[in-house]
Length: 373
Length: 236
Image 1 (tube, rainbow over the protein chains, first blue to last red):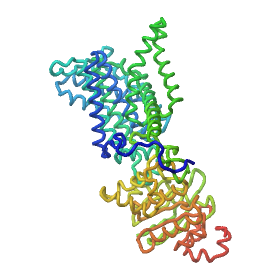
Image 2 (spheres, chains in turn red, blue):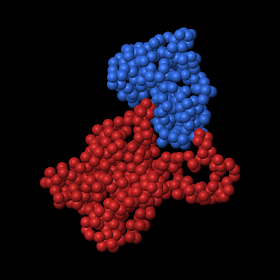
Image 3 (cartoon, rainbow over the protein chains, first blue to last red):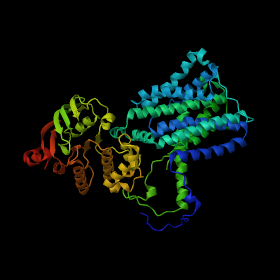
């Protein structure tokens, strides 16, 4: 046990780093973080090429899908392999409205969220009776069953050609890629702020309670079934918005864009980023967007055939997943948080607080990783 | 204003856990449920709170039938069940564990006050209110889960072996606390205990179960005075 004594190297209390604190009120704090993020992304997008802006937009849309999945799996303990299919529901809803009606763009996006959320309700209700791998199996079936439906009614859903989407005209002389990236970034930031608040609200507490111990949650008066369905609906709604944005990025919505591998990659990227974390989803999304590109250039460098290069992306993804899980079991965000806490600990050494129950110094007591601490 | 259990039978497959259990528990008093391992004590509590669906019989609380209602709805009627050796949410903080039980029964403004009052009841817990409950020791967990049951101001409190893993002194304090919260109020407490001696000392009534059947349902004093009964079923 460490001796409790005066700190060895702590800076005095007037140090700016010590005095700087984000407000404790969740909404305010999340808004400030989102505005900071928006500022950084604005600097990035306006200084990069249009193609890079396009990629940043893609990252933002995957952040939305991953954040929904992180809430469902990390906070509520339900595994879904069907979020790629919820993305398809959102994308098709938006594309159908764009093809047949002249609605406002925002309304079309909201309809995409609504349709995917409604599908989440339909899938989520039976899902409350399943757990772990069985739930994953059921959602997998959903992801498998959806594309053939779009193929069957090819006159409505456009068959292989798919449906075209149109991005609203950019105001002023902003180039279209940057404008689209900004639509997606704003969507992602709004989603993250809403989810971050939700996680710290009574709903977030109920989500975690249900994940941890359903019996304990129910005897404490929490409606277990409703809580699980709600998590599913929110997760599906996020996927719907992401799907709509993906349709905008590609300019066309067809079944080829939502293969089963998308659902699997979403789950893997979510685990890589840090299950249950929201900020970690940025890392997951970056990997989703860039890994396939890197693998393509890598296979070009080693002169691999087209067959091998197709698999290389999957192989690299698998290798990265294994390496990250060994190095940082709580994902990239968990690993970074651990490192950052270490650095802070070295900079501002405080007297060890001994936790009375375990007799361990405070920083040795395992703390569940979550965004708010 | 009482708990009335009539002809309650529960079976797990072919095994009869409870057969035609009938007794009632008065408000303002502790009713102890005693018996050896496998007597059906925990099953009895679980079927009152809805965690187990009985095969037949009725559980009537304040004139309302509880059999057939969901666990959450029974909890929201003021029935707080403290399950055996579990029941805290490990990955929430101590304070959030308490807050969880206030969400549906205490107004937003009064929640913090209720939480502080619970911390006064268990001063040991207030030191680690922001700590994850998984870091608590066995006894601290027990305090937390009892605190969480009390915070919702239950009308019926079901305690499954609250003394499990507690030091004798803490058990005595806990029993005194229970009695303090029950005497002169309209709270009904049903207490399942292996430690028959300490349970009988705080209870007004006692029910002795054996192999799923009621052996005797009488005042605690009468049960404690019957040396044959004590020797056969309670082991002291």
